[in-house]
Length: 110
Image 1: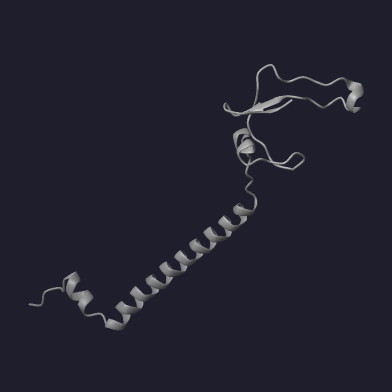
Image 2: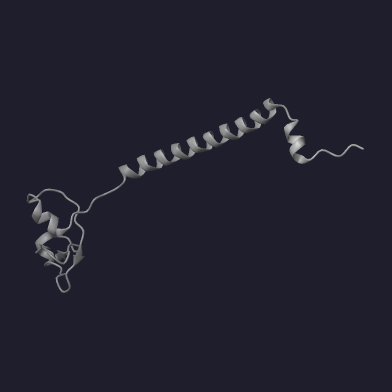
């Protein structure tokens, strides 16, 4: 009486080339997927780096002694009660406002 081969016996009868071929194909696919993920991450990081903007705080403005007339990006909160519009005749524009900007430590503005 012949018994039916077990799954382990069936696997062991496969030629080593077929087993290595399957393992090799999986590795190649995994390495390719990893390479694509790294490439996409690199491209995304490069594009994001060029669009980042740094806003200085009023405290940094005084610490770094920013020169009058120098263009910078300034971030902070408008101090309560400091927002007002100058007289219309002074600048010729009606959409100009004067205010004090603060970060809680330092104040910048009129």
